Image 1: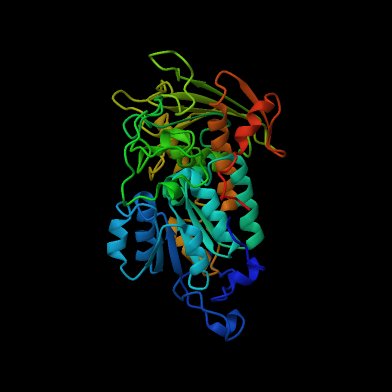
Image 2 (image 1 turned 90 degrees about the vertical axis):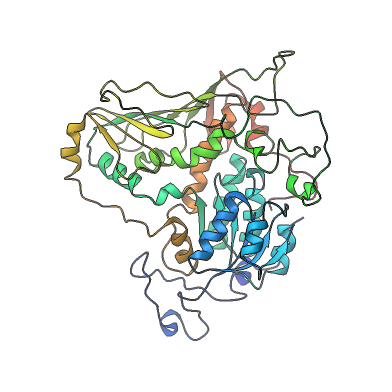
Length: 461
């Protein structure tokens, strides 16, 4: 169980007091005198952030290195696998090492201000919640959680504990989506009622549509398998799960949608203010075994289409958004010049006056027909530009502004993405979604997948 202490707000200020006054510029680097921020007890926003990394290999390891490069101090590193974490252990020899993040948070509570969370998906929520309960700022990789319920709870917790948060959908800070939003809101392609989003994953990155391996090889001596499983049901170790291929397994990952949806679907959710969908339906490739044809409940399908329906929002019309993965893609727009192709990962907006598409990291979206660029060039830039995704978070930790993909935004975004994952539990069925109560109105048997039962010894509260 994750122990609690009496006052989360008190814990927040146990080592240093952070400025709560927003700086004149949201991303200013100005050093503010201590007396301006409330007296000698306050620490200036320019002071160094001490942080710990939960998950020190893979993308989590990259987050640690990038945050350290921006000037934060690595106090502790936690990873269940010494091999995965070896690079960061070598780079930050001064950092104290842990296997269990709960132990680390207890022992380092008065030494750290913040944490990065870069574990497999099934551990994101419990690690992030444990940190926020102790008043620590949190940068969590995408998706924010493994279930819709977890995402809702993390959103609420970030507000309750008043910490600075950011989800690791790094493209949210890039130039391309800001231009796309400005052009959309200026009416460059007209009214939008249809959006297509796609990714080339899985397949070349990890396997799906496979069965649980029957072999039980010995667990590597460098890996604490019980801690790797965390709240997930117990099963024997196999390299088919760790260190990387966990994304395709229901118990650990969230498939292609969870991996790339928070990057790609982020853009239309932001641009069109989509909110929560009212209905979702998935069409998936067969999950059956080639041997006996029985359903496979272990891994995500080889490929899927997911249809989202969003209601009208004020003056904005209803929107239908289609997600494609596993090699499936939308039709090539008729207006596309010969020789050009849609990118391997991207977004396509269908407007009443034209179309627009871009990769998640393109600096300039593509317009069809190309004559629309003349109109787009006259559109003013109205959205603040970012100093960098991780830098936003560090500035927010210092009391300077708010990170753009904070949990208040990325929590609902994750809910939308994971509703597509939920729909893959019952392909071929249109799910009517009650966002307020987190219920599938017409298929209550799916409510058990909105959240999950944790293994004994693990909790979200």
